[in-house]
Image (cartoon, rainbow, N blue to C red; front, side):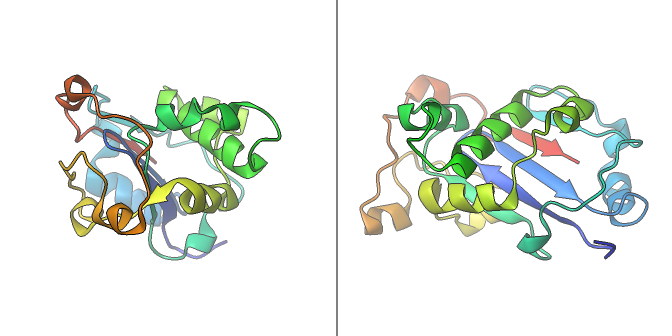
Length: 186
């Protein structure tokens, strides 16, 4: 709880990256803020940063992910296409942790203010993220781990080998949009 480490997660789909980091605000987080220049960073269409220097939390949510950010790549092309699936919308058709965590990720993606996420309890649990990874996750390639994008719109090599499908047809018009969009949340 009081270790000066950074924990969190990264959710990747084909077009967006949601990065959530947590740490001690006057130690590790201060170093991240200073290094990335988050205070002076303005949100754009390609990058949205939610940060408030006076907002703090009483406990760490993602400590069980240890010292690296948990990387979860969704098999579906977008988070929204996954959350629109009937089994996730209807109660009792899937694990509550999965449904709740997916809807919380959607709230994070739409948010404009960090304090609203905190007041609404919109941060997914570590257990919910692990359940998402287990049920809807895909293999993350080295290029994606380094911050890049894979331009292959077909299934990943791991999915091809396992026979898993991506679940929807690719829309070439929407792929022409910048796929390097990132959402950084601190």
